[in-house]
Length: 375
Image (cartoon, rainbow, N blue to C red; front, side, top):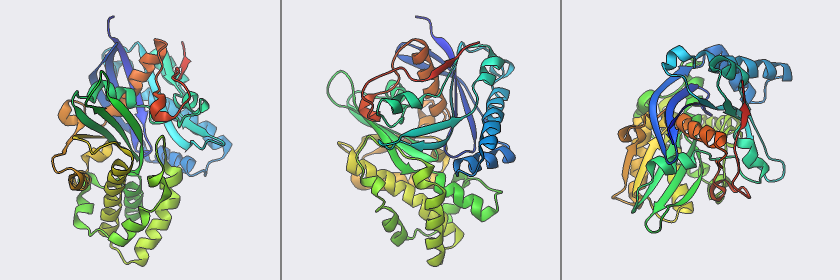
């Protein structure tokens, strides 16, 4: 079967911009052809933050849904691709995600019709709701891609995406024809660091580039120990989270506590960075069958050298021989993993193949993910 050219599009919980990955997808394979990103203009970014905080009216949400759809389309035009995709997979911008078993809901903004009209190809979007309706968390959904690209026979590999939220896929392949898989959100990755950088810079800076500010700070252990008592970390998988637990409400409370402790700005950034590393490794210790042999870091946080060092340091307390590397070292730029995963999910949907793994999302069955917009 000849590979299909698929464009995957992802904007994550950091709300900083959009990542595009053009991939060749076929049975048992995904190959990256091109990757690029588009930063959100400040005005659009502020509107998205307001929507994620619940501070947007129904009129504003409707307008934002269409404005974002046009933004996705404007940066995915055929002349930029140099090759026309046959399918597009659009994740959209999550502004609400509540996988509670009583009244689950998830909502991604970004009207898909504009992309379908611009590229004139079928488009798959709204991936999470089918899994949610079947009793799952609606996340994580990149697991099939992680398995296909990063699983290594005879090793326990963890693929950890560091977006706004951190999610891990554990691929334990020591015996048997296929690896044993566990995938879940570990908690915050960049979200608290990014919120603090915006707060301290008056909105001029959106992230700690390279972890330079964190490297100058002193980690405040009492605050980390307090935050690590959050019940989410003890909760067993399947589980997923978002800004509802670790966004603005958590940040405002944490920043208040940090100011009472008289922490400097660099100390706050260092402490939030260490909290990400400690909570990630705590989840590994509590919820994985063993300590991994290899950890592959992806997403924007993988470019944060201080965060990478902290994660490696914490992991080596559990396994001194663990290898920590970035996806870029394996041929996948750190910003390509999530959009490439949704390129694969779009291909699966158009070929009528299930995209979720019930063992990781908690859904009651494997099913088709995504709704199709045709032209």
